[in-house]
Amino acid sequence: MRRVAALLVGACLFGLPAPASAAPVPEPVGWAATGSGTTGGAGGTTWTVRTRAELEEALGNGGDPAAPKVIRVVGDINGHEAEDGSLLGEQDYAPGYDLARYMSCFGADGAEWSDTRYDYCKRQRQLRQSGSAKEKAQIQLTVPSNTTLVGAGDDARLLGVFLTVNTGTNIVVRNLRLEAPVDHFTTWSPGDGQRGSWNARFDAMTVITGRNIWIDHCTFTDGRFPDREAPLGFHGEHVGRHDGLLDIEDGSDLITVSDSRFDDHDKAILIGSGDGRGDRDRGHLKVTFARNLFTGIVQRAPRVRFGQVHVVNNVYRGRAADTVYALGVGVESAIFSERNVFRYREGSPAPGLAVADYGGDRFQDTGSWFNGRPAHLNPVAVALGLTPDSGWDPADVYDYRALTSPSAIEAYVLGHAGSGRAYGHP
Image (cartoon, rainbow, N blue to C red; front, side, top):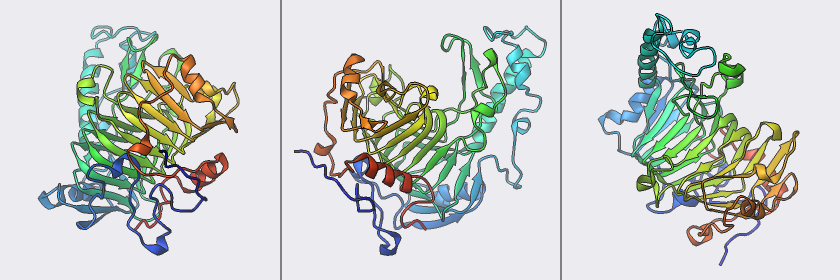
């Protein structure tokens, strides 16, 4: 029996805590509430950090990284911040590297790399590789088990930090603005796609083999460095300097992403390690997306392989001409879409923008809207060759209550999603 009921905006829905005056302990809803639950570092040591070095120290937690801890982020922390407080850049990681020279070694059309095309090509290749390794070592910070990483106040930001979870469990990331790193050493791959493609290395956040993770009231964005302002590369197109905003891979499981924003990005969220990685991912990748706002996202919001993914009460906004799709149905995925609001302007908006087939079999929608009208996404799925039955029902797994009108959903999400809007943040 389905357990879905309408709620008034501002009421307690999906386990959302009451206003800060009640000082509740926030709890997740969805997949992160199942299994052993997700409490983060509640009750553990509290750290307050203002620099990259302090954040790294707090994550290490005095030599006991897996012990419970709450890390409060104050203001801006920059992933490129050196120990002396200076900010590192491309030439600090690889003196002599030059993007224009690197591109020239592929030829004018970017078709094929040659070490001997110019006398500097071999050296540029080596500099790109070593620079990339040094940048990764600098900006990557890994969140261990039993951690709450939370922004203190309304303006906490991680700038150019490659935040990762690697086999960590019971983790909460909350009330943070995460500005995706710029890959100074992004790679041109001539054989990727019809004309080649740039492949950047770093996400704002990557979860690898993580379990029971709650990402709440965060903002994910390219921020100050959108790719549309990057240098021009091959075929008159901008160089791609960002990878994803949030990737969930390698058998990660029991994750909820709630009340968050994803802004101004191409390939936003990828769930799954690859079409051929069923050995790792099959039976895992259970993720809930609840009440999130997607604005100006071109594609992957999310794209799913293998996982049982519940997408409920999210709002999607953008220009139809700039959008490829929202929900990508990949190999063996089971997406249950429920009461989402899609609004696309200009161009030729059609419900087909909401869902795309990437080798999947199943997709199910209940009660979503497209530009103010019922979206009827199940017939769209059938036209794509998909079965309009996800094979599972979130209401059989966890308790939740969804808003049931587009006006209530938009009012709530536009008023509450993103960093700086969390109830009871410290």
